Length: 292
Length: 292
Image 1: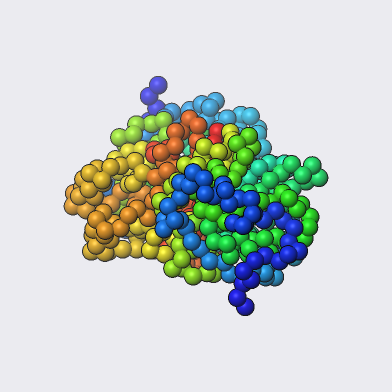
Image 2: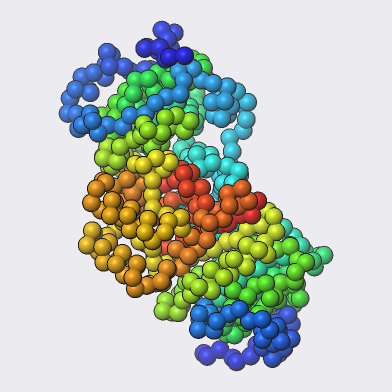
């Protein structure tokens, strides 16, 4: 079923679309070059049972701890995204301000909402995605998952992730900025994020983040733009060809951009690390940047 | 203070030296080419207070969980070796057979001993190091740390780590094989392990390991043999020069050997992953290979 063009009227989450109050903001001081902006596809506008289950909603399951997630990852039973969520839960506190820079289907947005929401209603989740449809998908998913509860805590914007600073209030200390880069799992692998705007987004996120905060980047590398070089799986000839292309024909890939940015951060104020599967070449790579 | 040539007479751990029962074993079917064998230096033959404290002995501290170790690693407060030990504690059980393939100062050997030792005395720790002095250092450290307790559970051999299969009984299912590759922390960084024998050792360890077991490799890359390429810290010219050297002059470095081996393992029977700091170029890299 094709997605509706607009979110349901009943939707009471604070969804800002182009026709609403964000428009002037979008037009003013745009640093985003449209052709470079990331584009990604949503899977559905309605939350599926699988989505809800994976977000721990339908089953009301207890959130997984870091120990279970990491040991599960090491033994091939857990995904990098589960490790990411478990680490987030150790960083994010109730009442915090957080950003989902790439909403996609809204899984991370919901996970973050559950981490910051409490009776004080001070927590905020700022969600972004360049595609209206992804924002609609996310808002529908949130509506299905939590109904009217915590309405107003989530603010969604259909803009490029490089423009975080335009949507988060300047006086709000941001505890976490989450990115999912590359193709959307289960989606069209030809629709990918773009390194140039990702670099801008990371720079903006690093400026926004408060001390003790985390930038979490999950890079899906199962596409040409995100693929990294793996010496263990390539012959000398293939290496030579790839390197030739790498140096002269193709701009830096997305993982390389993220790693380059992470490695450039000063060690006295940042701790940056990477977690990846080695014998699954297309498994996503988790990069975590902690501001000390 | 120079190390003694032999361990103290009072040492009651099961230390097998060349003059003892291992000699025939060493001479028979040697697959180790001496010049290729790893060499490394011990720091002291007596366990220092710092060593004991870091091993959780002097302070009698509670072993750290994976959650604390991983979140500490992400925030720059814990080392990769602490993550490794925390993961080991989730894999290794009392009564297991484990191998410390690179004893060094004995920190890992002691950690492993504490994981397998119980009143049944079924557990075994097989420790190896190509240098007699490292074996002496390890046995002294164990003596200092646990005295005569658990004597007979640790068996130390002054041989190359590529020869694991010669020391572990064929009928013993091995739960964990631990490697520390490269220079010894705090030691002479010009004394490093050698890729060729490490490759042989990994192959042997993978054959020995029982289902559900783990090969844990910590690669110290702060030396020429272990250094990996990091695009974020190098210009195009430096890349080109390094690649030229990489292809035509220098054999594969140690981290590359380990990653290549890990990536070659079939995904249906192995889960292999890597954890590393990004903005600390000489921080050790942790590679974990789990046999499903």
